[in-house]
Image 1 (cartoon, rainbow, N blue to C red):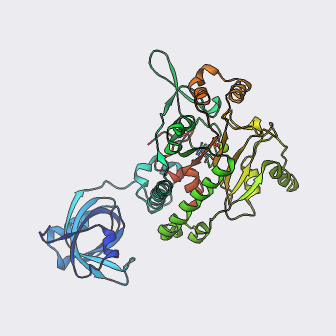
Image 2 (cartoon, helix red, strand yellow):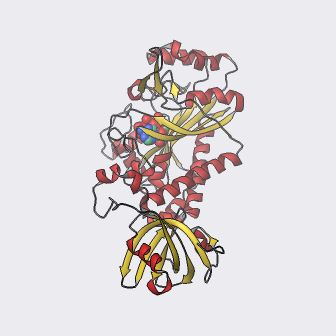
Image 3 (cartoon, rainbow, N blue to C red):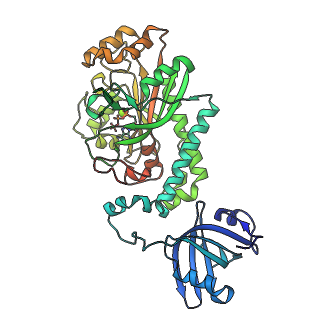
Length: 436
Ligand code: ATP
Ligand code: MG
C-alpha cells in the first residue's frame, strides 16, 4: 500500500467528495465477476458496499493475479482511485491499483435457493447477507433510540441477575439448572422483581437484558432467549405506565423510521407506516375486547387468555398498536394489582402491534399492599419462603408502582415486517436450535 493513501470506510465514499482521490480500504468480497482483462469485485466492509474494478493494464501482474484468484467472502486490503460511474450500483466505483488477499476463503457454502434450516445452521456466515445485516443495523438503532428516550427522561439504567432462585412468570416456562451443593437455580424469566427493589432507591429504572423462557409452543413469535426491555416506576398507576409505553414505542418508531428509511424499504417496510405511530394508542378494556371478538364470531369466553388469532382480530382495524387493559386475575401472574372495585380483574395492559404481530408489551400496576400480596402468593400456591425479599419491599416503605416488559425481538419483527421472530436477532435460540 502506498504511504499517502487516504484510509477509509466505504460509507465515507458516499458521504464525502472523494472522487479522484487515492483511497485504501479493508473488507470482504461480496460478489465477483470477470471478463477478459477486467475483474469486478463488490467489496463490503462494516459500513457499506462498493463496486471495484481491476483492469489488467492498470495494475502489476501480481495484483491482477490476486484479483483473478480471490474468492467470494475472502478478506482483502486494496487501494485505488474513486471514480464517479453511473453504471455502478451506488454511482461510484474504485479503480483498483493494489490488492492484497488477507484471508482467501474456501468455496462459500451459502449460495442461492437454500433451505431455511441450512441457512440457520450457517447463521454465523449468513449474518453477512444483506438482509440480516440490514435487520441487525436497525436492531442497533432500536437500542440507541430506546436509551436516548430514557436518558432524556432521567431514567436510571440498572442490571438484575440472570441466575435466580424463584419464578417471576410461573413455573411452566422455567429453565432449571444445578447451582453448587445441589442447590437449584433458574434462568431469569424477567428482571421485574429486582427492578421493583431498585425503584425504592432510584424511583425510575429500566434494564435491557436477556430473559429465558422454556416455551414449549413453537410459534413465529417465541424465542427461548429474548432481549427484554423492562421498566419500573415508583408512584405510578396503570394510566401513568401506559403513557410511558406509548411514548417510548412511538419515539423508537419515529427515530428508526427517519434514520433507517432505506434499510426499512429494502426489507419491504414503508418507513411512513412506522413514522405515523404517534400517541395516543387506542385503549380497549378486556371486557370490551371479549365482546368485540364474540361479535366477530371468535369462540372465546370471558376469562380466556387472548392468543394469536384473538390478538390479530382485535388489531385488524388499526395501523398503530393498541392497548388491551384490565385482564381477569386468573390469567395473569401473581404480582398484578387487583382492582379494588372489581377484585376479579387486575390493573394491567398488553400492547398489541398491528398486522398480526400481536403482543409486544406486557405491563401493569403491581401489588404494593403486604396483605394483598401474601394472599395472591397463597392463591397461586407459591412458596412464601422463596419470595421473602420481594415481600420485604412491602414491609419497608411500600409505594404504588407500575412497570412493563417489552420484547425487543417482537418490536423489531413488527418494525421490520419480518415473517419470523428469529430473524430479529443474530443467533436465535428456540426449542429446536442451540447451534451455532
Ligand atoms: P406471550 O403471551 O406472547 O407468550 P407473555 O404474556 O408470556 O407473552 P410477558 O410475560 O408479558 O409475555 O413478557 C413481556 C414481553 O416479553 C412480551 O410482551 C413479549 O414482547 C416478550 N416476550 C415474552 N415471551 C417471549 C418469548 N418467548 N420470545 C420473545 N419475546 C417474548
Ligand atoms: Mg404478557
